[in-house]
Length: 262
Image (cartoon, rainbow, N blue to C red; front, side, top):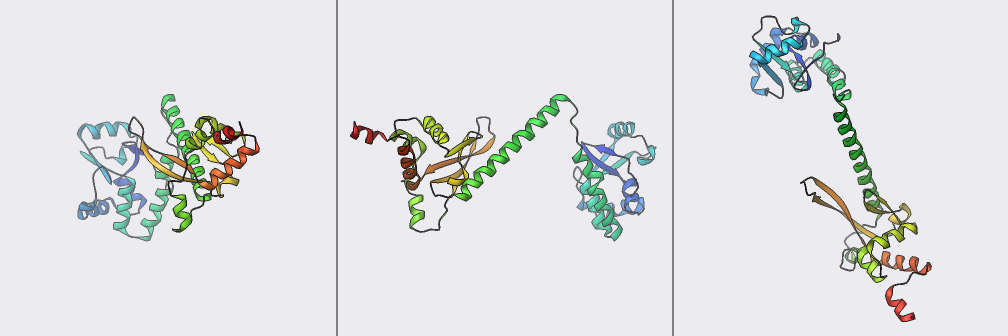
């Protein structure tokens, strides 16, 4: 496939009928005839753009090779990647399929790969979005790791226990020790039980499969309406006993035992 002159319209790469005919090794008239006979299969704005009047004049001023657009043409059709795909299916020749694969992997793909920001603020916004997305995906993977590691028994007695009201929040456990949830979480971090990422406390890997916690992902909306998810974790009775033994080994007792010994 000969090197194509790059043409862009509406922030995406497009092809003229002339270019499309050359790529598929057919005639311009054949492309036009196929479009006329299957026009109901093409959607303007999705498969093609029809330029007329001032829009066409402005476009001609941006294109160096007038041969591609026609010097005296009073209208011009620009084909999008989806439009080129549709023509490939109509032609249904080995050459057309081969050339569309080339277009998909080069001409149209390069635009996606090298869509460089036009200004510093735009570049910074794009970088911030990418960093935020990466961090979110990493956190989601960490959450999934914990949820996979946690015991998820079948619908039997253990399942009823784990999903019963006996599950405890960290707030309730902390209250038993006369602490706030913030203080308790920090203490468990100091003792190597959990770590914090993205504002969420996650168990270290060696504790994830012990059945100490039961977590679920909850959907919610920010105040500005943006949808998001957060993980809500509760401790099982087994986990509560684990914390009791762990804290006791470090001379941290629940309030009720301190009262009895005091």
